[in-house]
Image (cartoon, rainbow, N blue to C red; front, side, top):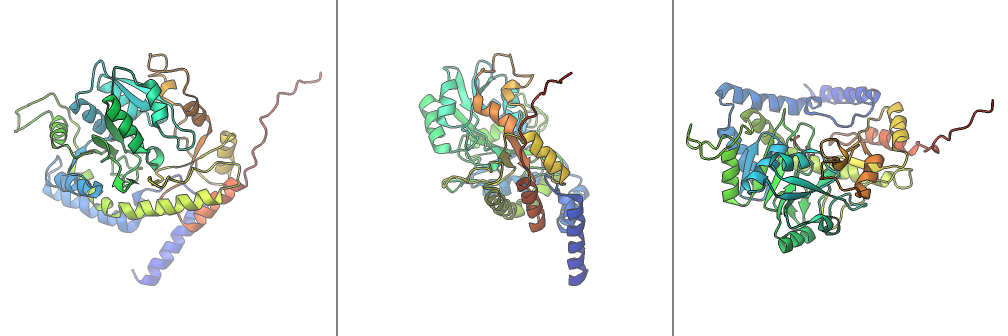
Length: 397
Ligand SMILES: *Cc1c(COP(=O)(O)O)cnc(C)c1O
């Protein structure tokens, strides 16, 4: 295509997008250049016929470990499997308690349950919406073996005070970095701050595959080896099984897609940071509370851009009527969801997590968001006037 044809195609795409409203996120197939590159990578794997583990997975593991600034990455089939295998390989199971935040994706707690341990839910700080030593300390018992801080929405947990608490209480720290690929804390990438870091490559994550995928990163060679064994039936060598494992491998097609996309992750995260700062700035003084600025030692890679509103459901209806998509991450705190409520794991009083579930609203956030889409989101939020809750009026018959 000539330069002019490319430009007018891009303009046309933008005009069509404006008519279609603003989606919550935009996937790879919307970028024709990226799509071609990824299809080529998939084609190359298909031509080799090597779909399970092998060179492509090893290359991605090397690239991802180097990117994170640690020695080992082990590709697995999902974020939850990264968490589950980390716990199992660290010897955490029956009789152990593991502290997790009450406001996270449910997988954080499920991994603990599947490992045979008991998740114990901690409340979060109202401003950062993340765990802190003062929300974690009250739920630590003599059975607590581990702590899983979650870098929720892409904002980094203030790790140093938590690591200090964990050291003092003899707890292992496993980071759930499934929403924070590439974010830095005091200069270091998340996932490398505890004993292990767990990532999901679910398609909509900041680094997403074309299906399910995940990785565990660690500087502990022995831990990496145990997880690498367990993800594939404890097999070494072929048909000789050393430990009880499972089928939880990253496949070669996903590794090839991820290796291409990893090269762009920093650029995409920069775009998310810029958009996040612009949105937050533009919403000051509106009826919603934008996310707090990231702390000086931390980072925010805006996997989600989450505002809070006392009139959340009205806000969502208003935005929908103006073509702006929204989401709720998450509508039910984990300790209040059916698998966990009343099972002994739930504590009655996690007021911040419970209040957030009623007030959070995720606005559109994706690296390719255009200036006009950003304006459309801001205009739609600013024009929302929360109405007082309807009052029941007794009929005068
Ligand atoms: C996505 C996610 C997971 C689980 O990842 P899957 O790949 O879907 O298993 C775990 N924790 C958090 C916080 C997530 O966002």
